[in-house]
Amino acid sequence: MLSILNLDISNKILLIRSDLNVPLDIKGNITSDIRIRLSLPTIKYALEKKAKIIIASHLGRPTEGIYNPLFSLKKIAIYLEKILKHKVILKKKYLNGCNFEKNEIFLLENVRFNIGEKSNSKKLSKQYASLCDIFVMDAFATSHRMHSSTYGIINFAKQSCAGLLLINEIKNLNKFLKNPEKPIISIVGGSKISTKFNVLKKLSKLSHKVIVGGGIANTLLSLNNDIGHSLYEPNSILLAQEIIKKCKNIILPIDCIVSTSVTNNSLIKNKNVNNILKNEKILDIGYKTINIIKCELQKAKTILWNGPIGVFELKNFRKGTEIIIKAIIHSNAFSIVGGGDTLAAVELFNAFNQISYISTGGGAFLKYIEENKLPVISILENIS
Ligand code: 3PG
Image 1 (cartoon, rainbow, N blue to C red):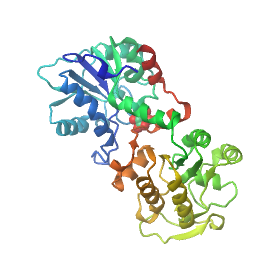
Image 2 (image 1 turned 120 degrees about the horizontal axis):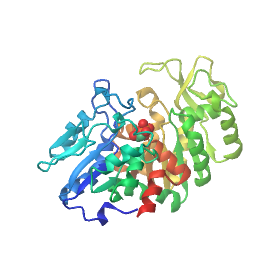
Image 3 (image 1 turned 45 degrees about the horizontal axis):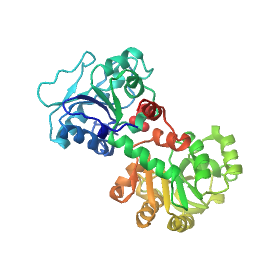
Image 4 (image 1 turned 90 degrees about the vertical axis):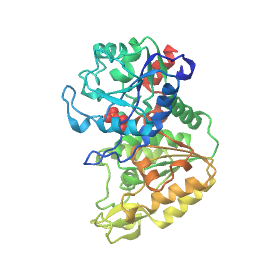
């Protein structure tokens, strides 16, 4: 991919597509700024080179054509201005052009308010392209979406290139996919079960061992055990059977922390997986499983992790996730971690700077691991 570093961007108008889709609490406060922070190098580089900067992003999944303040990028504009110490103006109407007055940065209002964004409308793609001299794609986390502001625009922009974050993501994911030091241990967990089966199959092929936790482990365990009221995916039983049959290097929990309620004060028990009662839920891995995982991670030279393996948000059920984080940061392995909930766990345990590579991608991260390509990356590779 052509990098922003290879172009003369001074005095040019850049449209940087970032992924500033950060989690917000019910009051609209940003609860994790990882995606914003990791988007800064490209923006700062453009500032340094005296380019004129327009930034575009989506936030959440609003209905196209309807302005909804809940999905406005206003709070992101305020945050960016503070963190960059540079004037950032939120631009609500921009499809007919942005007039720069001084050296302000324009942040375009949520691109998903525009009709045609998600259907990759040609008209909208052309309008985005006409805003800039150079389109800089830096939204790795949205590069699995063929939308107007991520994909369509590349067909019409005078010049397109990749931003620093996008290049770094691909470099690090390729290090895992193409040139990993062995042995490789992968960890797959989380509560979004159906999205993980394909990546689990792929990781089983690539890794020496795959540690499985969370809802996906419960679904696999449910084939041979009564898992009580635990989170699982009944519609994926056939897939689960196929995985158990084909993926012989999967490590499933042999014991777990169970409770009948999910609170910080819940009464908890450590039980073998074949001993769970109808009214109990699996909420974390148990002590015997923790020891097995620790041993495996000590041997690893490369570790990839997506999805917490217990309800880490509650202190009763976070031991498994905590042990994984500690094992990763104490190992000498190249570690790569991705996915929204996983990053929240990394932040909770203040381990952000001790992981070799933190990916901003959720769906994009999984899709790149699964298929080793993404639509936006392919089109960028072809035009360069
Ligand atoms: C993400 O959060 O994974 C990206 O920002 C993409 O968002 P989407 O799943 O709503 O397209």
